[in-house]
Amino acid sequence: MSLELNIELTDNDGNLPPLQKIGFLGRTQELSQIERAFVQEGVRRLTISGVGGQGKTYLAIYAGQCLYQKGVFEKICFMDYSAFVGVDAVGLAMRTLMEVLDKPDEKAAHDALHDIPTLWILDNVERLPAAQLQELLDAAKKWSEIGACRVLLTSQAEHFEHPAYQKSLFYQSLPLSGLGEEEVLTCYRHWLAQPTPIVSPQREELLTLFEQVAFNPLSIRILAIALKRHNPAELGKRLQGLLVQTTDNPLGATLDVYLESWEEDIHINVLLVWLAKLFGFKLQEKLRLDTATLELLLCLGVFQGGAFEPEILAITKIPKKQWRLLRSALENAGLIQAEFLQDFVAPYLKFHPTLAPILWRRLPPLVQNQIQATYRWRYVELISYLFFEEGKNTLLIHALAKRDLPNILHTIYTAIEAKERWVPKVANYVDLFINTFGLKRESAAINQLLEKNN
Image 1 (cartoon, rainbow, N blue to C red):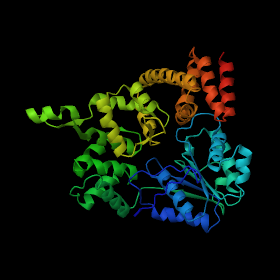
Image 2: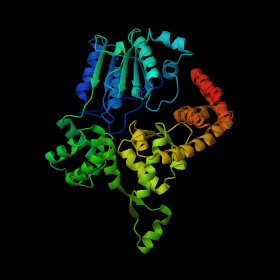
Image 3: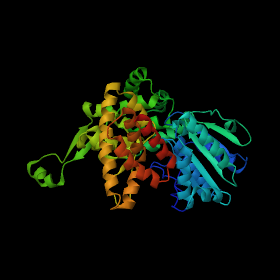
Image 4: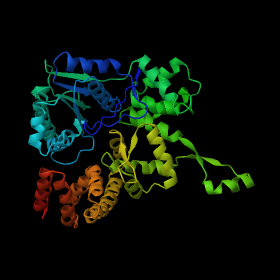
């Protein structure tokens, strides 16, 4: 069930993100269906749908890698809308295409599609407001009909209210449900072996446990890690109690069970090793997530798809030692992924699309308001810093602003709504960046809101 292909496209070929180290598991039939639809059946547009954690994005990325390797497409243009904030989803996609095709403007990029077979991957489009989704679907239909181009979408919604996205010769829908039993066990054995194997529980015990989460791949990955420390019956009993209490999909309850039991051996500072040896101290301690940290974890829900690590620590106020443990747990579960920008030390931590919404819904409204205020003020400081440093280190500052643009825009839009007194000044700072990035509709929308609220 595991296919070892993992091509990282160069900047000249596209912008597909790499798969995580676990590779591609399961979904081989669905992968074949996508290839058959685009290569043999003349399908122009295809949507992969399913609830969070089913592996829609993984499948789309892997399909893109396979189709690129086989020469079906020369370029891949990947757009992730999971953290989209703003008014111009189509414009952002076209700016991304300009970068992928190395063209100076939108018209040149659009014209180049006639000669360059390009696969558009539009990921997590259900996050878009209705009007913007319709606009994007209109544009995607046109893109899919240019030359040998095709469009692959992912969405939690199975159906779109759009005539071009109804079953036809040119459009297919591929809904994902839980994995089959054999795929589940194959995935479990693979994840169990990372990093160290243990004696596996009985097949029926595992299937009974995994059935509680509807064989959701991400939930199973998380449970596989928890099963290194707990037996299936113990986890199943705790999971059953949480599933009754939560309205989230099974992923929320699975995350609770997982984090409650997470522990790590933390090695002491190397400078103290000689003292430890001299006096017989332990060279490591076993650390678990405390109750306060699990409560502060919910504050991650304020971020728009992720953030740079210093912002996360400053806003959530999670102690560094506990954060190290929490980050390790979330990375192991595939819920966050570290990205590094050239010439910048701190990582950007990209969240799984389901993580922030699940956490945010669990915060009481009063706490949401408090964390929003802390978040806005921290980002005001960051935006101001970026603005005044822009002339000194332009390339790096632009890269930082672009990567964290969802949080920057969210700060401005929510501040306008909250009628913060500093909004006009900081909006001017943001305007510099969004105009530099070619997002003129975004700039116009912010200025209109400012005028309306004056």
